[in-house]
Amino acid sequence: MNWLIGAACAFIVAGAAYFKRSLTLSGWIAATFMGMVYYGAGSLFWFGILLVFFISSTLLSKLKQSQKSDLEGSYAKTGRRDAGQVFANGGIGMLLCLTNFIWPHPAWGYLFVGVMATVTSDTWATEVGSLSRKAPRSILTWKRVSPGASGGISTLGTWAAAAGGLLIGLSAWTFDALTDVSRTSLWLWLVIGLIGGLVGAFTDSFLGATVQLMYRCQICEKEVEVAEHCGVQTHYHRGHHLMTNDAVNLLSSIAGAIAGIVLGSLLG
Image (cartoon, rainbow, N blue to C red; front, side, top):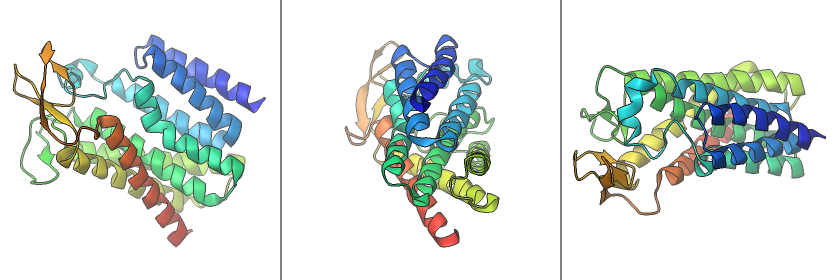
């Protein structure tokens, strides 16, 4: 029954996002499947945290969308997410949920919150940071870079990343208390959410500035993540061909998960 409940709830929430043009059809299907697994194999703890990430990120993607339209054309990850982006953000968490279903242990929860804090912090940093009035700085050189440049960070984006991580930490404590997953204290969940989220978000920026696959637009000369920009094909500029945006998200989530389990093990 829990599998059906998870599928039904995820279908409704993801369907609303689809009709709001926040998900593609493949993203809707992937999110429904993921929600079924999170609730069926997990509990409200796993499913609730996933919903907090999904709903908050969807709402932020619509925040002052007209101001972000030019930047979104440079991103492989835009406001409307497909199945690949859905699994890149929630796939590791789903595997952790299934692992916990087979072999229950509090450590899986620490890893999971680190992952979800990462994807939330990274998404919040992108959606809010892109509204900053000041140009971002390169995480490598600290020089000013153009808005939307991969590897660029801003004060506004960093604060947004911290807020996103804290929200996941607070959500973890709330759903932990409701489902009695591990009885972990509020302060520990907040620390895992904050630090795990920032570690993951900064890892994303570092990988974006170093090894992520990037292209150069032939028309506007901008460095972009997409193979087509300004209506024409872009040229390879730098990075490894396997290091797509989804691959970077995956590695960043792993970094956040490691931070989560280390903090949980040392402070729990």
